Image 1 (spheres, rainbow, N blue to C red):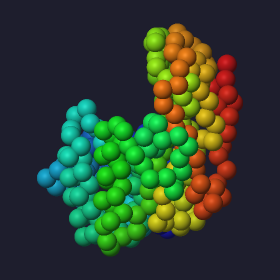
Image 2 (image 1 turned 45 degrees about the vertical axis):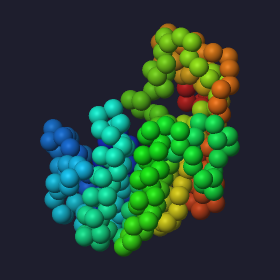
Image 3 (image 1 turned 135 degrees about the horizontal axis):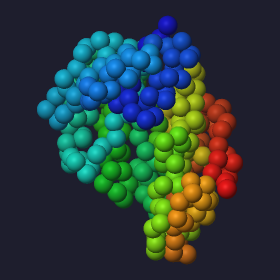
Image 4 (image 1 turned 120 degrees about the horizontal axis):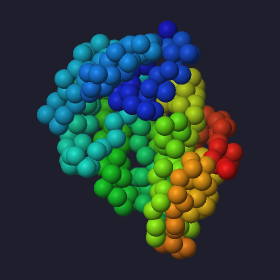
Length: 270
């Protein structure tokens, strides 16, 4: 029985943990909130309270005794600086080396590609144009340059699914710019299944883009999703200021993965 530790066991991590348990894995999940410890234990995820800071990590060494470590801790630029997050990653690398976790999966974002990079895939050099995108790309490079373990990067598109309905995102808002730009989203089901496929095939050492192959215009998608949610429809400007379409070469080539959501209408159509 293999053990997977999920550092940052939030919305995606919890769903992944439950799926791994069904596959017979032992799952360890970390949180910074003591209130969530009993919730994890109740569903079979071994709970750990881990606090990661720029100065160091307060942790139970048993958490890092695992076959696969998944890092799912996005930067919170509203609360901390980019430098603070990068220092956390540097401290984390030291701990990974100390405990010799051989396989590490880092959850990144398609936000590492700039909004005006056009059609991109894993062979495209990211040119991030947002603070969070720049931070996550820097974190990717730090982990890839580290020695002593193999790093795999998954770049998720915007995550949607249960309790994260996209119809809430722009409900009632007006004059939203760039209405003709394509969306790059992934449903939670696909996010979990891609990760499971990667682990099952032991397809480590790659970079995987992960978002649905369906890229409707932002205005069309969010009007549809908002109607499905039953909220006030948003109003978008009929314009194309920047455009990005994220393709997923390695999900197809390496994993032979078939996306569950290939038409957003089937999920959020009225």
